[in-house]
Length: 239
Image (cartoon, rainbow, N blue to C red; front, side, top):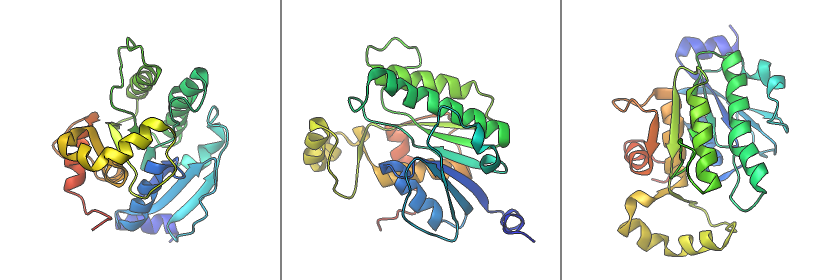
């Protein structure tokens, strides 16, 4: 019996994580490797992770504009958690749309072609505008990506719209706004709890939805407060 056959027989799932070198994707990978529900994790990204684990397979893929070469890797997968993205202001407006919309839609297409029953968890953002009327490019592009994913024929798409994502470990913040938000986070989370979420909580919720479903919440969209509620019922990594 192959490793894959053993995983199937035990009821374990095969999960793909895209963007595991990033903040949320990194926590998603850590959580997925810990939980027994997941028997195999495939990380697909443009950077090496520098870690090894018996459950982990790492696949390098630099051109997400064309995910056709990933057909074999994506075959037989049960779910995917897509966390690939970039910060507004760090790239041009055209590149922001390419990364936010085109990469997500192309990967979803390739996944669905190779594993038609696979579930898809997508990292969107607070304020995503599916109507396309927002003057904020990030909101328009996230909304555009959501619309395309929901129309892609994937059986279950879960869209997560976090507000300010708090990185648990200190880091060099990408811009001044993030430095301010991190500084005031202790007070901000008390005054406006539904406008903040820990990165590890968000990651756990995304993985759990992909591998276990969402219970009474039929989805497909989860706003920040709903994500926090989902995370509260999960076994946290930090405790």
